[in-house]
Image (cartoon, rainbow, N blue to C red; front, side, top):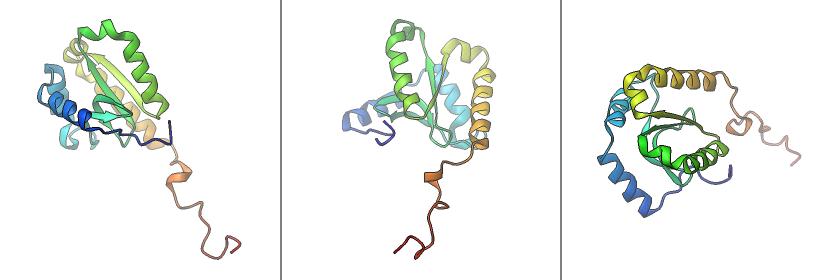
Length: 143
C-alpha cells in the first residue's frame, strides 16, 4: 500500500466530502474551530478529506495523523471502523478515535494525544528517501 498515492480522489468522493464538510456534527465543529488555520501547534488539518480510499473526519498530513470523532452510530460499525483504521495504519497513519461526548466533555484529552503524536514525529529522523543526502555528486556514480 506504500506505493499508492495517499489520497484516492474520485468525483463521487469529492461530492461526498464536500457534503460532509457542510454538515459537521457539534463535536466536529468545536474541533475544527480549535485546529483550523494552524491554530493548534501550527499543524495544518484538513476536514472531511479522502485518505487511502476513505473519507476521514480530520487529517494532518505532516504528522500522518487521522482524527475521527464518532457518534453513537459507530458502535454498530466497530468491524468496519477497525478495517478502515487498519488500512490507514498500513499506509503509515496513526488513527485517533474519540467519541463525540468524550471530546465535548474534555477536549484536552484528544488535544494532548495530538501533541504527543506531533512530538514523536518531530523526534523521528527523516526517512532516507525523503532526503537527497544519499545521492552521490555527479560523476561519482561510476559514469
